[in-house]
Amino acid sequence: MFEAVESLVEEHAALEQRMADPAVHADPAQAKKVGQRYAELTAVLRTYREWQQVGDDLEAARELGADDPSFEAEVESLEARLPALAERLQHLLVPRDPSDGKDVIVEVKGGEGGEESALFAGDLLRMYSRYAEQHGWRTEILESTESAMGGYKSVTVSVQAGPVKGGGTPEPGDAPYARLKFEGGVHRVQRVPVTESQGRIHTSAAGVFVMPEAEDVEVEIHDADLRIDVFRSSGPGGQSVNTTDSAVRITHVPTGIVVSCQNEKSQLQNKEQAMRILRARLLDAAQATADAETADARKSQVRTVDRSERVRTYNFPENRISDHRTGFKAYNLDQVMDGALDDIIDSLVEADLTERLAGIEGESGG
Image 1 (cartoon, helix red, strand yellow):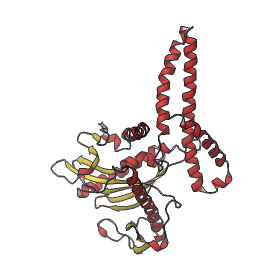
Image 2: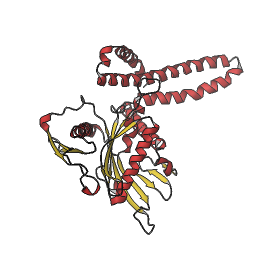
Image 3: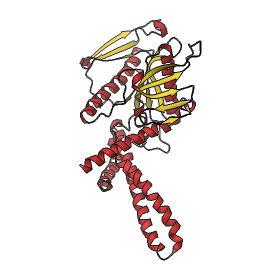
Image 4: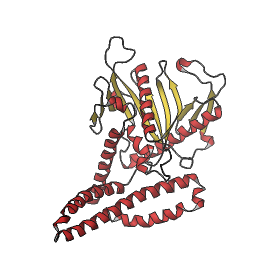
């Protein structure tokens, strides 16, 4: 695979020239795309050159070590570094999900379990918000429907990458979608609900849907394809919280996708938020169609919020978190609910890389 790096050198140089072109930066969408690809190739070339240098140093140390035993320690050190660099380079060369560098929209919906499920949906929102905060990402609630006890029947939040320390563009693997895309699915909780008077453990579930946030230029939406309705906002229990028709419901007629927003005070703001969600859903639907033609890449995304389709279980009495796709298990649920998700997500990223590598090796072997 490493021979492919040489072909990336010219592309990297061309991107570097484009990065210096003011015309590119005049178009934010184009600048972002160019910057992300440049960052991706920079990581590949940096690792490749380090791998080459360590290989050259190892060869030299072995030659010197033939006459001078004092080089033995250096040979051992270099021999230990080389496989790790080769593995990292191999991972960097695996074709990435084209959406990995994007921001993300996450929807959390209460499922079976009534009020307890809605409370758990609120806990998941807090968990993702804390995780985003730890990574320097920004979160914004786009739409929410609260339950009577302060949980969420449904809540939609955008997660956007923050500025990189020292400037520059984040590597695609560090962007919100690359890290959060594996969260899609049914999340099952086992605990004693606050509504339970006899201390019995209940099981309920919440569904998580993850979509890359679409740029305006990525999804073409014609005004003629939209039906826009306005209505009064309502709070928990259906009571009116606004005396004006500020809430907005947008129906994309060709696909039947419906998005409602009522969180903002003005009709214009609610329409803008609804359009953000609609663009993400349309992009997600287009990607799902493309994926279905090549591989079942979205098999972890939930279709119904049913306890039998779980991807992860949160067992509060045992303080245990279990991911059913990778077999990951840990007993630090309290920390996970406070945003310590990296270990779980790392296991999913690693499993995904292993699967992609196996696919490449299978193609080359065939």
